Image (cartoon, rainbow over all chains, first blue to last red; front, side, top):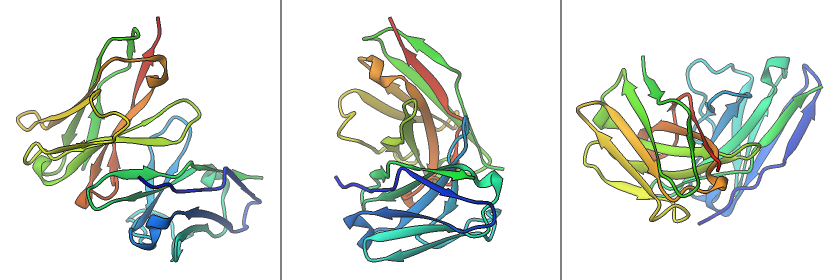
Length: 107
Length: 118
């Protein structure tokens, strides 16, 4: 098995840029996926395959990758973006692993 | 549109089993694996396993091996997750998720709260 590490929390003011990292050796070989989860709701996919934004996800959400670290960037953060964000990867057999989650607070 | 609708909340005693269903609609049921993920209160997401409805193949997290069973009923377009020998630590919200290429969840069920309490 392998692990993905995220910071527990990130805080930004409205209009600023939020960056959330996810690190793990597996990310050098496997894609990362990002989910937004608001209280009482199911996770929502916001970034696929390191950098791809699914249909309907605002352009202010973007993803990048460098070595064993992937980054979710939210440009021009809005109050509605406040949520928990989870990174996830999968091995070749379809076993998923999640990071510990990052709580994004919009000040 | 793609929908995954899960069964309702459950309350179980320690040692009992629980079976949660996930009914799929809006796409070819046999074309995607379905995964189960759980989330204990205040915790992150935890992967449990998957089933391929097309051939019945399954894969489980080692943590739940021997205690979890994930099955698919193609006639009902429904996937089931059964967890046995429940303990208080199994109290969580359980989600099903459709997985393109088995890699990630593009659509998720609404979640099912399972409470284990004596």
